[in-house]
Amino acid sequence: MHILSTLVLAALLAVAASAPSSAAAATDHSQHMTATRAAPSIAMTAGVIRKVDAGQGMVTIAHDEIRNLDMPKMTMAFRVKDAAWLKKMKDGDRIRFAADMVGGELTVVGYEIVR
Ligand SMILES: [Cu+2]
Image 1: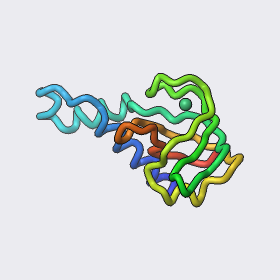
Image 2 (image 1 turned 180 degrees about the vertical axis):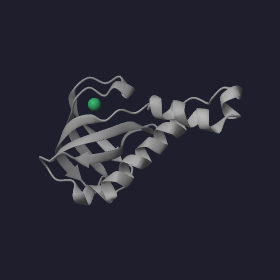
Image 3 (image 1 turned 90 degrees about the horizontal axis):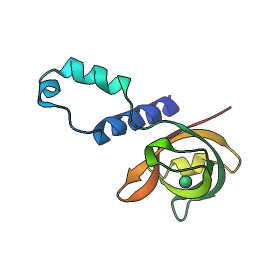
Image 4 (image 1 turned 120 degrees about the vertical axis):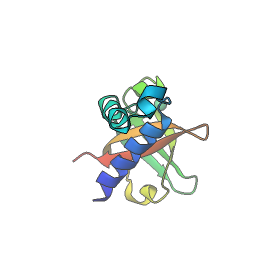
């Protein structure tokens, strides 16, 4: 299921972005995995798609507070991790999404449509 794989990717990115583990945790893989599941660093945020600009590779989203980016509720444009997503996104779609800084730009790194 594509949406599920998108969320898994977002989770993997969250793991990659998290701080390096301590020396003790690094030698104990199972302990590290448990800690990762308990504290995901990228939360899903509710939003409504307002504009899709495939030419620019951008999507404008009216979004709720994004805690991991310390950003209040607003409407703004994001890049997307996978340009193919822009073909599936439509104005007015209600979504839940994960956003993060990628290469210095605010980027949607995972999303799902809310039905
Ligand atoms: Cu914003």
